Amino acid sequence: MDLLTPLDSLCRIIIRAREAEAQVPAADPDEDPDNVDDFDDEGGEALSVLEDELNDVEDELRAALDDLADDQLAETLALAWVGRGTYDASEWDEAFAEASENDAESAIDELLDMPLLGSHLEAGLTAFDYSCDGVGQLD
Image (cartoon, rainbow, N blue to C red):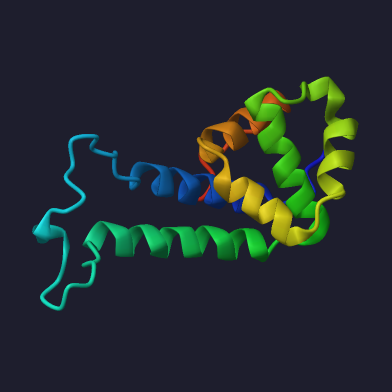
């Protein structure tokens, strides 16, 4: 399979997806929702720096996906499905056809809602003998 999307673009998406995954704070089941420390001086919820950074990374990831052409976005979604195991590499045509049925916004939302998106995309690339090793590095 020849990629429609430049490998460096896919690798940047993988990096951004991993950054977003790394910044998701773990939920604390013992956290008291009525804790007054969670609010600012005016009674509104205070934003943490982590939440601000997470929003920036998510915005960058959404922008990178939004910059893809429709066929590239379908390819990215199909690669994530192959990497996740929804489809086997031998079922590429079927995966790509199904991914192509989604409109751009739906495809982007599905990708952004996918846990471990970076790992799934990387596994999808590996299934077709592509790798991000050395991409973007000066040799």
